[in-house]
Amino acid sequence: MPPFNEVFCDALSVTYHPDDSCLCDCLPFLESIGFNISYSSDDVVMLHADVNTFARLETKSTFHKVEVKGSALEFLRSSGMFSAFLGLLGSCNHTVTRIDAALDVAKDFPSVLHGIRTRFPDGYCRVSRKKGKITELLEPRDSDGKRSGTLYVGSKNGRARKFARIYDKQLESLVKRAELVEPRTRYEFVIREDVTLRDALEPSGLFWHFMGIDLLKRPSDAPEWRKGASYGWHMEKREYLPAERLVRYLDASASLSRMVEIADEIGPNGRSYLLAQLRKKFEGGTTFESL
Image 1 (tube, rainbow, N blue to C red):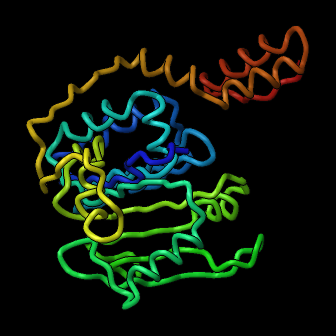
Image 2 (image 1 turned 180 degrees about the vertical axis):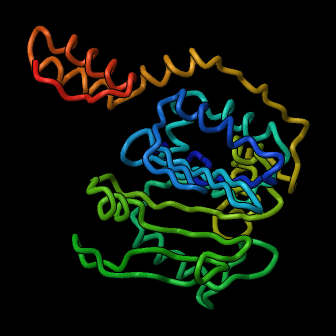
């Protein structure tokens, strides 16, 4: 989970014209750093690096889209491959169609809720050019009965081009993943226009440009932000040979590691048996033979 008081990208969507798309390069790149295909259809490929991460590659007749959120982005950052991934996404003509810039603070959500109600008694707050209505989606917490949940600023259903979301991250972690974390409130600014891949890599300027209008106090050292500005940013695209991709895929394969563990349970000849079964699988034969 990201540290407190550090702005990070929590969702990224990038779209392409079908005739100029990098999706065919995204699949081997993600596989090379530990993602595996968990679902595939004619127009959607879902990949995951563990049970809580996913990357979605979508190929429609009129557009292609790459969508990465939450813990998958955290995985890319922690592996040191986020910049390289953004460089790959930027190697073809594209449009960034969504960025969520987020900040976690070490405050319990009910106290944040009380503060927002006190500061904005009319129920309106500015996180863009116009004032937005504050919408509350709350319910009692099982732990203490306090009202908690999510606030939306500028959007009732999350479909606006720009809006803010403030929610109880501690409650979400408990409900979705049965994880008990310290009190944490997440502030997110969601934008679907005027952004670039640079904003995904360095989202602090974007976040404070909007969230610092009314909702939060903008730090004195917060960077300036200009819409659509790339500042000449360019990342070199890393090319991996097929043999390199294969080795990295094998190194990161939890399925292969598990097969080896099961083979070792068989006994001294277990790994030889596993290799024999894999060879038969490659040759198109049956995969089950008695030892």
